[in-house]
Length: 321
Image 1 (cartoon, rainbow, N blue to C red):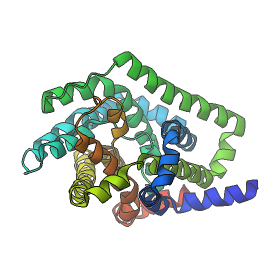
Image 2: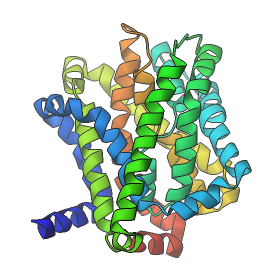
Image 3: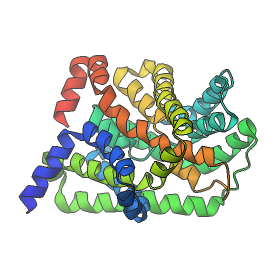
């Protein structure tokens, strides 16, 4: 049984991008399964972070953490400059107010905690993604309410202490579990099973993808034209933010610049869903749900582009993982 599980996880790890791409569609095609998986949404977030921390080189994370200018610049980009750029750009377009608001809020959210795993799948800098993602997430309770009020006139009444406690439990719990597994299994054992760890990350991401689609199919069927516009905007906003981030940090080299782009476009809107006032604008909630589709589908679609941009270095990174 253990051997079969290893083979299965190894297959998922090798086919990570396309598995995630198809997995998010399962939640739409099987709404009953999405409803059944809904209670697993919150636990899957912490376990996704655990799997990514098992994969990342902690010494590389420590090295990046000792470069405060780099980390600070990335966090300022993700949490301040990127949403301001999004606010400026949507202001130039004839978009419905609720859609423009949703795009700016998406850009203001921290990167998804699973971005580190996606970075490994795409051959990017997982250590950089982990450090920048965690620090940005910790900064979110301070930056998001200020930007929402200043740019959009929205008052997000975040209970700061409760929010920070929840983040500490998720991040601290995941780090503690990953550290315990690393010490029990050993770094060499985990390194030899890198593909299986990638497969575990993919499996947990699939649980999250299916669970977050609960209720979305019904909305799409009831108002397909409206949903299509919101979905189209999501598929434009995500790569546009990625391109902005990559261009802004092009001086770091292709691999790290693309890593910043990945963080910029794949934002943790679940954090905002937790603090939006009850009975708020449903169009914003709809956009946040539909924006999960490009997050799960674009890695597969863009993998050939990543390979071409990274060249031989990218091929080696992909084959070594």
